[in-house]
Length: 132
Image 1 (cartoon, rainbow, N blue to C red):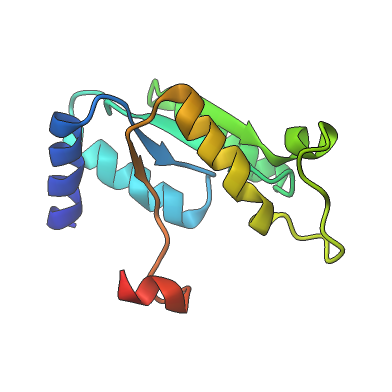
Image 2 (cartoon, rainbow, N blue to C red; image 1 turned 90 degrees about the vertical axis):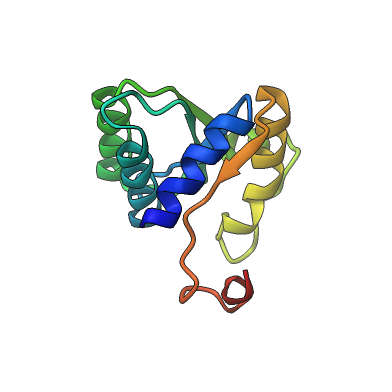
């Protein structure tokens, strides 16, 4: 925890436009909690970014929006559905949209000029992350 708090503070000092990936899920809730702790009692100096797959429980989106409002944060949303509607991305036969998040994410990072991005994936969740 102390290492995470230190990293948040270090990034705030070294970057102009950091952002925290925030879906309202358990991993991103922990990340936001750590950021709030790092800067309390001041406001978190980062925006939040949700890459919305369109496959969300309404309660999670309500929680996301309520949390953003409660802490006075700014939320940016990159919508996978918008990319599908424009014909840039195609639905997958298996229905999953997680692999389709990359393009909306990278384009939103570029268009908003975010220069540091925090994500909250757990090492035990994916083998590829275990080496990070």
